[in-house]
Image: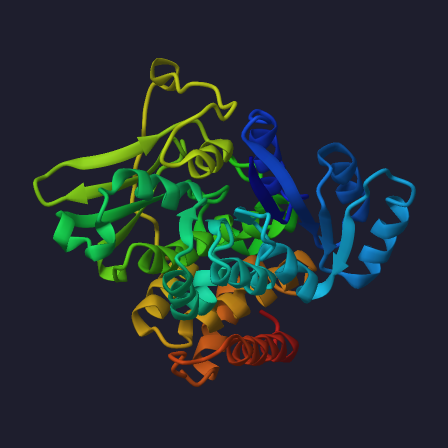
Length: 395
């Protein structure tokens, strides 16, 4: 039996992971579940899946969870805070760790799993955006297995040959093509974007996701972060990566080879496919996803992203090329700007302006040799700068 810990079990990726695991009870057992503040839902999951450990990022929520599980036979041990999440990620009985905590908060436990030599199913792109060198060094040092869960990166992984870690050029790869749905505003006039509401930005036309990721998809920052993540995952630079808008979200990404071949991974837009792939790899098993019907689909459309409509994508490419602390600052400023937009303090176009001004105001620093504490300190300074910019002007 393979023990699995799920970091972020109450989110959309966590729920999909539990669905796939439930289809293969003879192969997997849930060792640990974690959440941020949703104690009620985590308590329900604990009663159903019987983990040995449950952790809440929020200590007050952990106390609520403890009371909700009082009297439960074989109740899990309840942990809390960052230390609790890190402990869960490194449990000896957790052979696989699904890293699905959104945002910078997911970095410490994801890094703990990598350092512990786990099979890390990485759905937290910020771990590589913020701390790519530190994270990849931990994977190499511990012998951990790193398998991408983002549908795009998982698709690329499936389309690459074994041995790609030696360098993409060495295995004949010319270019990576990252597909993007384009979000709900891909056809809106640019001048209309100033009127976008949080509800409109969170209404993704294809995927069902949390509010923060939905906004990132609408600005294409999500795709920009994926470009940076792809650079680390596949050992390449942004010059080998092209973003293509594909509204149907059926072709999840493509790899172009020197001989003219282009390999693509297709499937219905359901996160259970990449989750099942990473859980079973190098084998395959049922994910619960319906087969793709190409005849019913009828057509596949592709177009270049409009730089005027999606300035966040440009900022992400610029940060990837700059390296150093730029990707970390980009991510920190974006998290603050998106939260401000959802709170009604920043307009939709203001998200990109906050990010760009934060990047301009932040002195670029080397992150080589930085430990986790140093990276967190840089992250906090970038967040404070973004907050100050928001407070100073109407954006």
